[in-house]
Figure 1 (cartoon, rainbow, N blue to C red):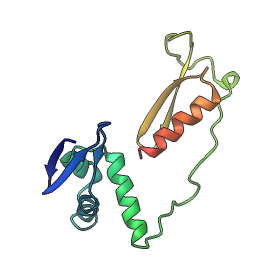
Figure 2: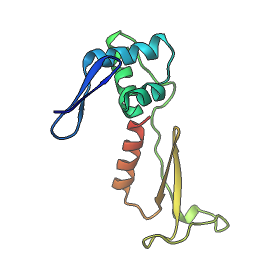
Figure 3: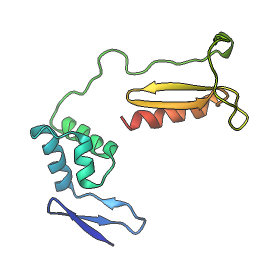
Length: 134
């Protein structure tokens, strides 16, 4: 099992290649977010981790501290696309893999581009994954 050191903490790597983040390092990362005002992206860059992982630790830390995490208004909305309602004047993208038109959906700071021919179940999976990275 390979190890590297960040902030004085040893980060192990499992045989499958996943990093093993010590709890003390997670606490230090969330302390930096909370007390030093460092952004999750900056902490992630220092650690060599993905920002989504650092945000996950942050949410867990806030919940442990008893902070109620809520979203103003509705957290989700139903999205439906009726291709018949798309005005003919709107430009479409060139055909890609048999799809004649694509759509863009903005979820927070992420832009999802997908063919309008996408299966509803696959679109829901795509939206779920994008939501986890926020």
